[in-house]
Image 1 (cartoon, rainbow, N blue to C red):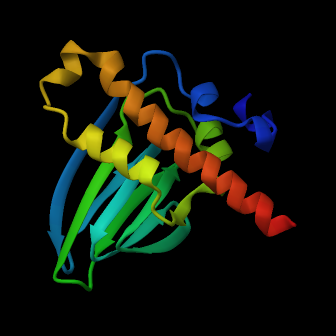
Image 2 (image 1 turned 180 degrees about the vertical axis):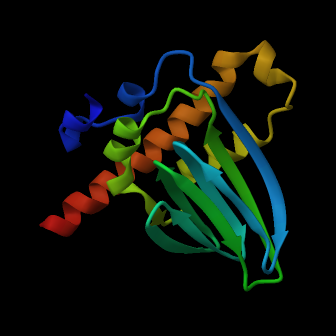
Image 3 (image 1 turned 180 degrees about the horizontal axis):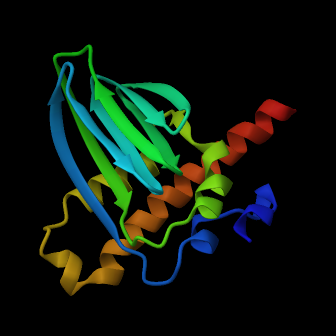
Length: 167
């Protein structure tokens, strides 16, 4: 089972099944707007360019202020509440294959939360968000590559942050 993976060996590539699918996007929310709740197992990256957002992953809540990026994984419920800024611009990368299970999410969940924006993550999520929607079905592997890469980069950085905090 995935939850038995050692923290040092935990990786997105080992957790996600071959043929994974991702969707990317960009939108602007106003103060008080809400996205979700989404139910079931969820895994995504969110890059907040302007504004603030409260992210509720199951029983955990964390806040993200722009510019900021976060890894979010939930077993049961994921919800975003935007504000108090008047405009919140967000880009996201969402795993959508549908075969994500509680064990896989549980392995990732301890490493979720906000972090400093990195050039690599920013570039990857912007690249994905800039892809035309019709390319997803025609070039599935091409669209999955930036999704895997951005989630892997965020997971690796969170694992490093935890390691440094323990020292």
